Image (cartoon, rainbow, N blue to C red; front, side, top):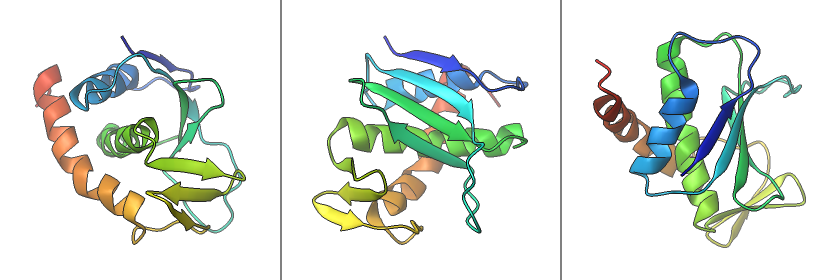
Length: 140
């Protein structure tokens, strides 16, 4: 069973932790620990809505979320980040030297963008996963 903790300062109308728990279940991932936290990092000129970090503790992740997102935007971002967790969990996405990402053996350097394959895969799958989560949680 996945353990999801929402540690963000402001609570939302819907349960983000239940959303992530259901998303990971749909993706066939179990026994992970995920913390949802506010994104309070200085990212310069680049705007991030969500960032997933694989922690050094086995099967433990942190999802940073930009504060103030609407519930609908947050659902989309969380679906996207669940796909990144799957990529990490499968060993297809890795972090090297805190900034360099390795996806399926190829290195990617900041700035990260939608054209990189790990992002393309997450963008491609986020809408489908979002629909599946809504159906499973009986959200219209």
